[in-house]
Image (cartoon, rainbow over the protein chains, first blue to last red):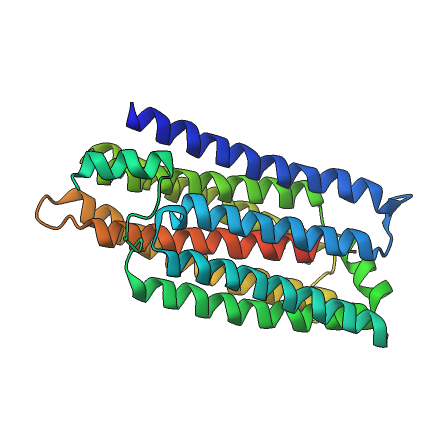
Length: 98
Length: 198
């Protein structure tokens, strides 16, 4: 029973991660004009946010952080936020000075 | 707490097991590597904003569907190694070993797809020195591939551990799996930054 529960949960996690990956195809369609990609801050911020959400899901579920000690749960969440803040911050700062 | 009780607690997501998967050292490594990769990503994103049209032109040579396929293959390998950890924890070592081989199989498919993609681009004239975008593309995908190749060695250690009754250690199994998952999530970020951002 426990094995089935694990399998179901891991399958659910994998399905969500694949669905988010496939959603990128739709984003790409929305940011392409006549086959040529067009610049879009919304798409860039969205793509980074989606990727960071996927990283958190991988850490929590596949890497078993969900059931790890509180300190590791907080540390990994902080790390994911740090990575997102660094990437978005540098991107938006670059856009501002471009 | 018995193994079964711990499994039930983990499956239901109740509270904390007080157990760091794979031990502390691998997490120091994963978090350190995450910072190193984040610094690469920041340099790439900043440069991208300064030469937006040139980067978009380079990006138009990539096949997004191939990147999505590579991502799904690597996510599947992560799923397989997560199952491997569960089987090993429950004492089903033969099934754990099969999942480890499956993980390596998906990793190999990813590597083949990557090589096919590199060859296609090089034939189109997109090389490390052809443009700034492709300099970043080849650097990031190559450094990720180095991590993938190390991952194959790690999976070899995992299979070796699972094959001998006296060698089996759940901590080592979790350490190997944690490393492999990190290879997966580094790719998730690289894929979004190279193929999707605009």
